[in-house]
Each structure stands twice: as structure tokens, then as C-alpha cells.
Amino acid sequence: DAGITQSPRHKVTETGTPVTLRCHQTENHRYMYWYRQDPGHGLRLIHYSYGVKDTDKGEVSDGYSVSRSKTEDFLLTLESATSSQTSVYFCAGRRPGSPINEQFFGPGTRLTVL
Amino acid sequence: SQQGEEDPQALSIQEGENATMNCSYKTSINNLQWYRQNSGRGLVHLILIRSNEREKHSGRLRVTLDTSKKSSSLLITASRAADTASYFCATDPQRGSEKLVFGKGTKLTVNP
Image (cartoon, rainbow over all chains, first blue to last red):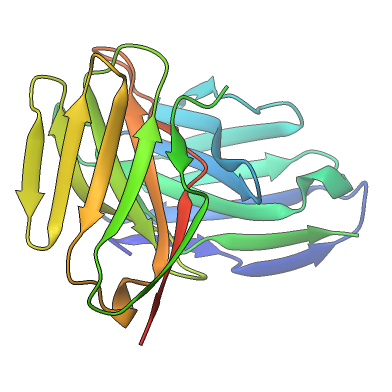
């Protein structure tokens, strides 16, 4: 998975609880991304980062926040989880030093909100 | 909104046959990429075609791009059971954009 790991890989939580998903990379990706994947919707961008402490919103950012305090780690937080946030979450990094936005994906985190 | 839309949503073929998947998009692009996703795994980049290219090959993969029709196709020749996966197109919609826009994918099943 191109040097990108995600933790946890599976999580079950209850509505209203905060949840943090972690993405860790060892390939010096400057740009990193969080997506969610749902049946019938494909991949949708939640937030992305273009450097340490530099982040921006994606297509479906409501209810999510991110932080990037160092290059290696990109955290996704669900401030108060809802059942609609049950999904598979993928982290990705962009190929460093290339003008082409080729992305490398982690293995995903399956989140279930009861 | 989704930029790329793959067609068909699902495709089932026999080993040895060719598989063709199509992608349509809405706005001008810099390039178009195809990714593969095995069940339970992350996406893996397969091939990229730039907006000024019409066709590209990589092993058993052939990608075409028609910018006038805003469409691309991915052909997998002599398919194998191991090609069973979902395939996604992703567009890089504008020069300098940091974001890709993914389609909903085609689920390919290759039967032995």
C-alpha cells in the first residue's frame, strides 16, 4: 500500500461519540487526502492537506475535521459521529515531486456508527 | 458532483475475453487516470493518459481518450480471474488542481 497505513482498520462506535482515524505515511507525500467510499457514490473527497498545518475542504466536509501537525500523520476526526458517516474511509498521498496528481492509497478503515 | 461516470456499473466475462469499460466526464481535463481496487483494499494506479494523447498502452491495458466526446475507455485484453476488481476513472480537472475527481466505478468479474 505504498507506505501508507491507516488505523484502526475497523471500528464500531455509537452515535454522538467523537472518532479519530489516523493515516501515517513514510513516503514524504506533501499532499494527503481523506476520502469516503459508499455504494453508489464511489470515492468522495472529505478534506485534503497540502502541507503541515495546511488543509482545505473537499466535497463532503460537513461533520469532519482534519489536522496535520507533521508530514507523516494526517488525522480525520468525526466530531460527533452519525449513522450517515458509516462508510469505508481511505487516506491517500500524492506522488512527491511530480506534476501529475497520481495518488497512492492506504488500505482503508471500515467505520460503523450504530 | 462526480466528474467521471463509468459504464457499465458491472461487467461479467469469461477468462480470456476482453473487458471494456467506459468513463465520461463533464469538464475540461489535464489528464485522466484509471485505478483498480481489489475487494477490501485501497485503490492502485494503473495508467494515466494526458489530454493531448489519444491512446496509451501498458501490458494488457489499452486506454483511449476522446476529448471531443469527453470520454475514455479502458480495455483489458485476455482477461484473467485475477483481474476481478472494481475499476475507477479519475480526472484531474484543471491545471494546478490538487484534487482528483473519481467516478463510481465498474465492477468487473472474470469467471474462470
